[in-house]
Image 1 (cartoon, helix red, strand yellow):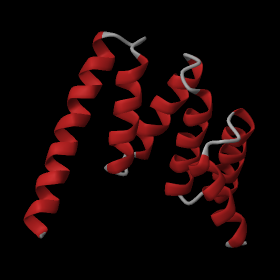
Image 2 (cartoon, one colour):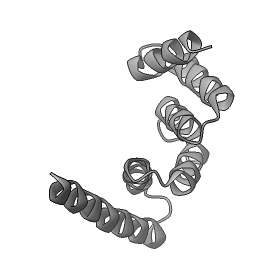
Image 3 (cartoon, helix red, strand yellow):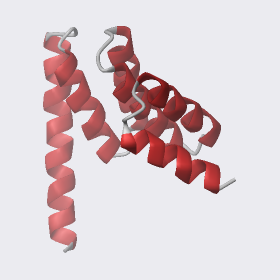
Length: 111
């Protein structure tokens, strides 16, 4: 199992590099930024993910999901207050975003 996990990590790191190259070539290509952000989250590269989710918001690309992503970044960093704020913003923008609702529920129960 350890070999498979290492292989997946290696592929994710390679994908991160490729998505970063795509963003560098075309900074306005929002989908590449989203792929980069989500891959960075898998690798717990919160600095990269946070910067990409913020850039996606600046591009007005899927604002609810971008706020949800910023919530995941904050939660990954251990900042529950900011995470909860971002998840709530995501829900304001898209009340049907189930993952954000679940995150709010989970964080409010932990208090």
